[in-house]
Image 1 (cartoon, chains in turn orange, brown):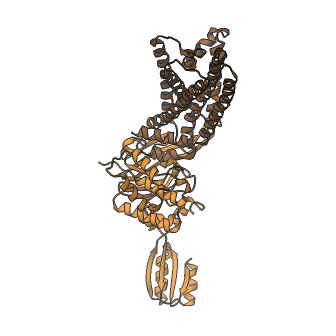
Image 2 (cartoon, one colour):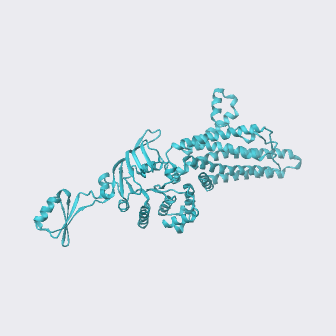
Image 3 (tube, chains in turn cyan, red):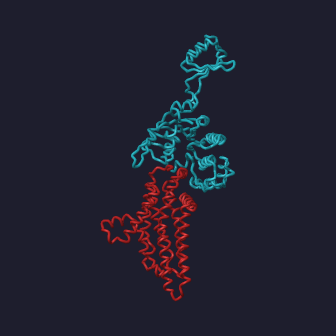
Length: 310
Length: 264
């Protein structure tokens, strides 16, 4: 059987401050899997343990307990890293290099041998809309340009798995859309993408699965659609609602919103049968009856509490 | 290939490093300061005082050599510490280590980059020595390799010690430790007869015997010639130096293998 792209099993990590004796738990028994070809969002409020998890995944730090693997290899194994493209949070660079030189440097380190490396570099720079800035020193780039260059370097080795820590951070709305489109194009190519982001509306548009952690604990992992479909409200649209009936409806805890000729009623799922019968008996014509989907933001806030998402 | 890429990048970053540029400026200032009394003295001294002139020139060369050589040890230690700590501080290490690059290769590349810098430094040091001697009308009757290889091995030791220490400590602390070690070596080197054997022996075993690797051991500076030493003496001294540097470098690799890589 093929190993999953990423596997975390009961991973625990505690940071210890030398001499001070302070122990800060970062991850506590976190387990999850990311299958090949999936686009998976890794969500959590600041300090939840996202960057720690990604660092363990990349072999930068070691877990205290538990097991983790990338394509079946121990994190940090050269064979695993040959298949990963990584964009760190706040991508740092050698400021004195040009984009072209930096990509050449990373191409050498990736060990990829090409007949025409210049063509690949030009192609990648065009992909992230930096084609006119290839010979400009990176120190002169804006934050958004640096982020785009970071994405280009992550794509250099034609990786099977992309680990992106906040890929749209620092980008303007147009830049965000470009990155989103790029991720969707990579998804279409069959790449596995594991990304963290605070912009949940974006995650909703591009991801298949969502993993949510909070204070080092796994809160939820599952398919995006099933997570969104877990809404506990229904929306009933009727052609008219007499005032006497409106009172009875609101007493059931429903919200009534009159929009022109139609009336929109939203209520808890537990009240749907009682409401439908009441409306029917009251002579209202039910135009539509729809279970309401939660937004990812609502689900996220419900799971981790307020203050988690931007 | 990957080690070479890291080494060249490290060397390139040294050439743009403000501290190195300051260091080189200081180097040039020292040379200019040494040159002016030499030229003045030369113009004042009559041909009859050739003996006196030779003594003056060679003393000056000896002084410059020991000063610049001491500076070199500090430069090697600082460059090695900064090359690793700088990557950690800026966070550039994350993108580099995300590449299929074993940690030892990263450290080896950094170490080679430092040695490349020190190679340039040794050549410059040698150039200055010969320039001063030439200005004073003197010639060195010595093999060049001694003046090139011995300082390089000495700097390789200091770079390896510093690289090992920086995997554990802050670079400023590393420089403090290096200065303390260099001072201890001087104390144990010059006044070892006054120190009890039970102190002297373990210290000699632990500290690098950089005095043993001093080119001045072979060079009769007052006669500007090389002392006739058997090749076995050179071989054992250099083997000891390289062995010490290798041991320190391997310790650095061992510690670096298990340390966390993050933005400091």
